[in-house]
Length: 68
Image 1: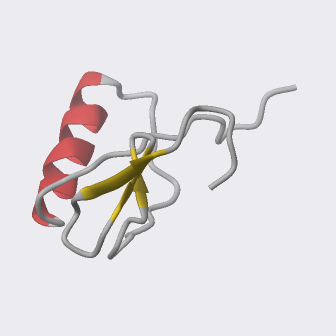
Image 2: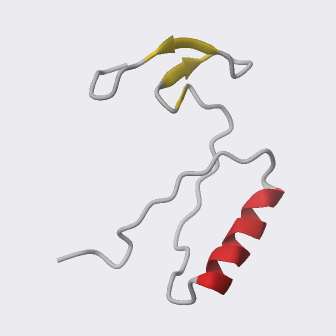
């Protein structure tokens, strides 16, 4: 049986203010969808399969299915 909260959406946004715009667009176009949880990540270590440094520059590619 599926959970009522069984969909995760991961977004990379330029500012936290853009999140509210996205949530409004989702609520308007998909009225049955409700956001139940939000998490803010201040510094990403891995983005789209690439390890990144403190400036967000790629330092290494991590192939899918591999560990760190």
